[in-house]
Image 1 (cartoon, helix red, strand yellow):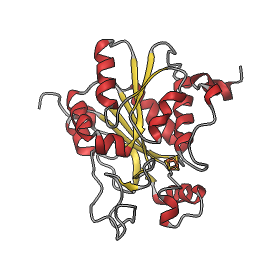
Image 2: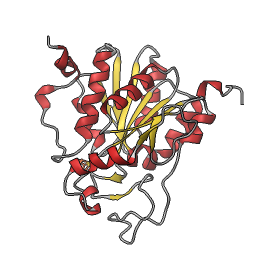
Image 3: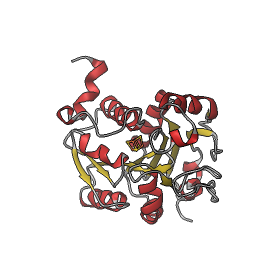
Length: 254
Ligand code: SF4
């Protein structure tokens, strides 16, 4: 087999193409996850993928692995239940920022607190894409969306302190920074405890085009220009991507 294409064993190729719009970033994230699965030789019979609802949530069905497509916002508790029922399994959640941080935000909070040994990969496009482009918990301030036509009056949520104080793993990366994305996902999968990778990615149809981007390549170039890699940060600034360090120094007995 060609090493370049070995990652395809983690995909249900007969189900392709995906239902995603041309230029959507979800396919880049899906492919990168499969490449890291292949690199780490994740067991096909010992790895389970769980998703919630939304465009990103459709990913789960394309993995050539046992998978569960749960109700909106409920991917994390279902994943925790699978892990607690069989600790030998590798359990990975794939879903969007609206699903994980908005509808399912309460479940995220408690999974961080419980330090459940699962990995969450958040396709973070800053919008509820599937339902037309409503503002999500990480839509930037002043950005115009379907539900914030005069600009978002709110500021994006920042979950980093929750991860730091609970000795868990948080990383931010983008669909442009492919090698960095692989590193963030690889380290998350190897981390013993709760890990979360936020991948900034493009929803061109229900977000980017409203912001004036002509195509998703322009959004990728924005990621290239805007985000700076800082893998030694105690906390990432809004324009930084990286793996939050210092977690292991925080004691477990607070
Ligand atoms: S609506 Fe947005 S997130 Fe959904 S498939 Fe289309 S481009 Fe992707």
